[in-house]
Image 1 (cartoon, rainbow, N blue to C red):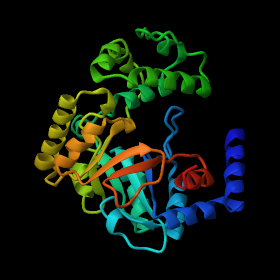
Image 2: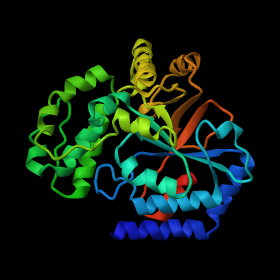
Image 3: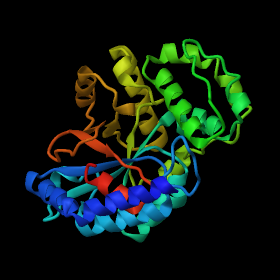
Image 4: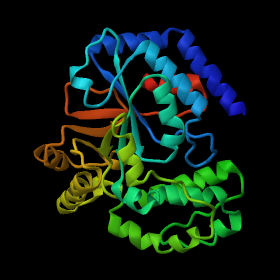
Length: 316
């Protein structure tokens, strides 16, 4: 509560000091675009990976409509406006996009980019780290500390949200920054415990993705959400092939947008995507994008207050 109040005061101060206006002018002058990377929009609370509350998301939409020309990824290179350009770019394909984000986008007459994970749409299960966060968010202290994870000696200190957050981030980093084969070996000591936790975050199904494709721009976020900077070129090419087959056979639409998971990639993978007729390639990078480029940086966008989220949209 106290931290949220401090954040509100801080970001309100930035805005009132004219810094927001300076950033907007800089974006316009340098012809850069703000591609906002989002994930979940939901009133559900999760200490490990807090969704953007629908009320905060709607305030963000109002702000963007007033100060930006909001378009899709495909429209970036051709968009003409006196305002700077912005894109709402969602990753993963969570069901709460249908519940909360899409109704608000419709209300404000805006479209978004959604980069889905085919394996999640097929299985109905979220990616491994979200399953882990779901477990940590609901499991008691003793159950979490039952896990014996190779080369990971950290234990959860107590039941507080702060302790859980610290533990969850350390464990996620321990698993994330390595090739899939290594992570799966470590996962064998974690997976059996997850069944003892609470419910799992719901994903959009293939049929539900097909239902939104007329009003939402659909790209891919790899087939199973692996950090490609740790994988071989053969692994990447096979993963891309499966993505293309899914778009052809299941969604019956061309695959033109590819978003690298975790912002992790190798330069040669970008060349593979170009040769495969991928028109736009999305990274993270925490910087503004050049609308004329086929490789586009995004800004991770989150926050508990409208002021915080607006400033994130301006690169803070």
